[in-house]
Length: 609
Ligand code: AGP
Image 1 (cartoon, helix red, strand yellow):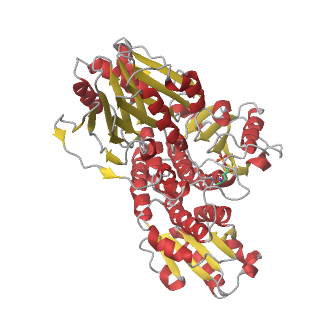
Image 2: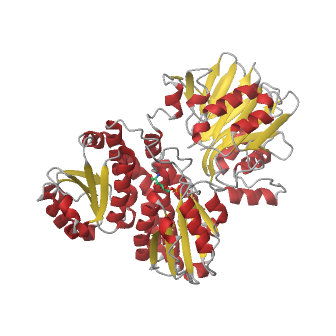
């Protein structure tokens, strides 16, 4: 996610901003910038790349004298990483400057409105729309302009704002993106997260949605959207800096597991307009979609597992044949790719060597469309694909993917429904019902996250396990693949996932007394088959953990421990069933004392073959 820092006080602002941004580097970014009021004008410096580049460019901030300023580290969502797209962003006469963390979902509509009123844009960002909209509404009263902007924009934002003709003030406002405020000995400070302010104060104010903050050297005032002043209590931060970078979580992986509701919302909501799925970035007409005769999904690791789910969802809803390939196999098997084939490359990092090579192999074949489902904006796969659909999970730091995986599933659900409608396989009403189910997923994930203690207690029983198996049929097989990988990559316990129907073809010989078998039962039409598979392993001594839909209490007679997931459409159950499996793996690994965020032998992005 982006990082915001702002300061107004008696000290030089720029060094404080750089120091604060450095404490937010863990949030992931690809460019950075500063804006400082020098007594006459607001001056801006920005640089693509690491913060060090900006620090050197500004001579540690000395090139930007002044005691009021805002700074930003940008994680690109709209527009490639570049100096132009880096924040801060100005209005047209450079009298207003903004930094932003979040996604303005209706920025295109607002941009068109402003362009008809003569506004010109220099960047591809959604944030620049905020700068010009403030200009559009500004009549001399910053608060008035801010409130009007809040009433027009949709989506998530944390904003730091300076108005040149109010040099003694700095403003901040948030909705759904984090923002904190601190009072320090020599001034006032805003930031996206606690680490940026701990050097100056441990007493912070957590800003709530649609609260506006006016900061002055000596005073901080809070207002609601009706511009009524409100009183707020500060919170004493006891964390050490290292803990604070993880938002108070012990590990990035746990933080990212808990960020999944927001990541799913951020990936889903901008693509649902008036109850319909709109994937603007796809750039394909319904006729072009209807002309697709076959889809290949090509990826590695967990991204590959989302492809296994996608096969069931696309074939079920859109009736398009789907083949799922490991990128490291696809690139060498001289695939038969005809006109009318779409190859979907899925990659969190967008830099995985095998997946990038598979993309280049696909592009050798005339008439093949390549779509990238990628989390890192401007990454190699994003740049080389014919079309890109970004997952807005924000930067994922832990090696074991969780939130990016969940947002890749969302991207596939959206595509499958859109393709099914364009091919006449799904009515508006049917699509509308599926969309409603999708929109419930974030809150259902929150419900599962709230239940993590029970899963933690169960995980503690398997810290010494030598091997753990995962079985399932259909989409449950895809979930088993991901559950098994999550466990083995961070706990180093041997684990395998099997299509449950395969047990009798050899695997069942591995079952011994007490072997843990995790059975996925989210596909109601396969319950009975799964029950017989559970009995097969239980009679050979297995301890069966069942993950199934709430209400399927029958399973309690056939298994030793049950975790229920909320009811959703059968095509979407992976998004819910994977949550307890992530939590289980995390706590088993913790129990074993493993380095959860950086497991041995693994890298976050495998950029070599
Ligand atoms: C998953 O937890 C692993 N980190 C790994 O399997 C990963 O999914 C795989 O390397 C693909 O990475 P990508 O999504 O960045 O291409």
